[in-house]
Image (cartoon, rainbow, N blue to C red; front, side, top):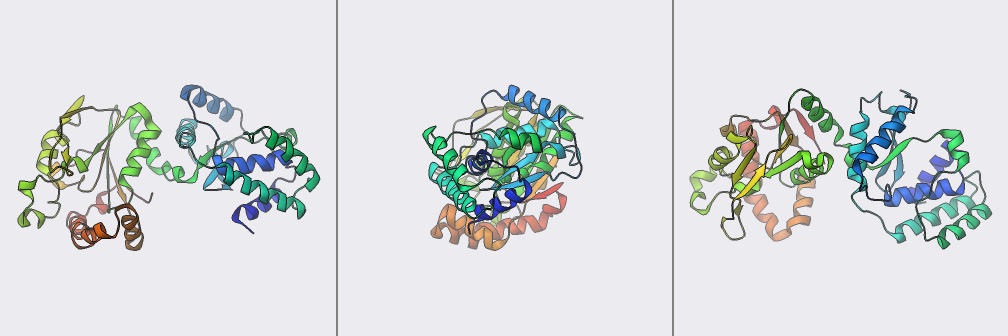
Length: 354
């Protein structure tokens, strides 16, 4: 039996009033998530806040319900117990919904699982009822569907469908939002081992906070050729142009904007200058972003952990076997020496995996 088949058994037992369209809705959400992009963000937030206000909070309701495919239903009735605000839930939902996912083939495979389980007598409805519904559903073009009236009456569903990976953002979101209640700007540094997901985390924060977030990459401050000496590389944290980062970025984070010239490793020279307007949330991502030379200009510090075996797998997948040798013999040892000498993870407010 497939994982989705096992999940259908769980839902059929939990929701005995489930009808064919509720099983199809489960398959659709598992494959496509929310099923649509969120264009009108403010209306989406307002609708969630309204639904939350009408939902009785229950500390015994689990926050998340697995629906397969890496997707979960975030139960609005559990928000208060987990100290999650409607605004935070809306951010997670919108960011997740705006990442397209799933295929028609994947949906059809899950519909076949529903057929098999109906024939096995798992549901309260029989295989003939399901077959009739699926015939009409196929003729309609396999659209998103609503819960049945029976399901709504029995369970009063109130949830949002979210990619499980976005749920890992909650601890960091809570810290950011708490700080933003106290001050106009928050500056966050993201450190971590090579391939641990620093750039991914920064992009997710940008998706969550939209125009209120800007990202600066430490990769733009690689060493110029004239500084790439054995003596420089022997320094803990010497593999970054920390002097230029201090001069052009770290010392200006309380100003309205910064201007710098990104270093382009593909040509070994600086690119055109860019001016970055600083936002309510400014994210500095990349190894060496917490170099002690900067005298800690940040409000929040995050370290991304990664096991060596997974790190190797990610680098091989991202860079290929030829480049992995450079990482193994040079870049990873330099990073580890910097982490140890500067006690980077010990200085962080949060340690995450993405």
